[in-house]
Image (tube, rainbow, N blue to C red):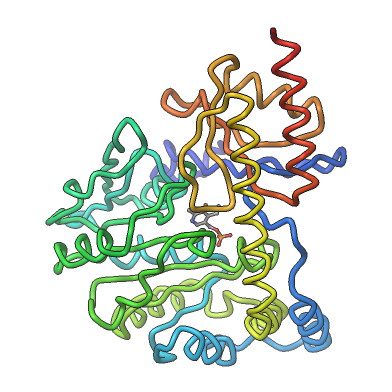
Length: 354
Ligand code: PMP
């Protein structure tokens, strides 16, 4: 740290992204990316947009906003596009939390929530999940705080149903409830259907997972017009051109090819079910994932040891070195071929341990 670094960040612990190694061809199952390339339409429109990069991007993301509005049957003024959903989540911390209104989220959830609270110097409360990693709804009723729930949750993979989400939103009329639906397309119910009914609900989604566009950085939030206007105030006070024009074009191409997205999601769900079955045969225990990853542990091998041995064998998975998570690994669902390689290598590692 230099002597110039602001004191307010002295104890800030930044988010640690999953490894993005460039040194060898790993089977990369560690950052929940899609194993499939972006839609051809997304690629083609992005290349076209590259020819006009001398111009600033459209700060209103008009074409994308209109396309999303018709896809989700909402009004264009209920949507804000951002640089990945990380950005809209950060905007929500900035807009809806302060010293009187702390943020509240599970103790085991997306690690960035804590960092967003810290960088914005906001108070926050971490609510312990149950021992089986389920969330206790009662903890979130009349909370008096701005609530952040990843649904499905990461890294546990577990989803709440829409009735539970609605009950939480309804029970906090004076606070914003943010539902982070980064993984919703792999098996959970979206709360977008509730945004016209509740003025305190913000739903965030991303193009990074089901839409194969992690590298393009595109996310969005959907809520009532007033909430979206608050978020726009934050956006126009930080980075009006937060979505670049190639990404915008790719996003538009992607939305015009919904069938491709749906096909890929179905394939990933099928491969998840296959992988879960095969890993259970090897003795793994896991949560019931509604995502594009499995969260699993094995009685005969430590999570950290399996992670390292798989890495030596050329397969990257995600390991979290904390008390409650260190037995587990989070394994992204890749292609069937990639998962067969993972299963085979895991089998060998377990046999070598006997
Ligand atoms: N929410 C959750 C639960 C995530 O796991 C991630 C991805 N790491 C994000 C949000 C942010 O994803 P992105 O910024 O790529 O949209």
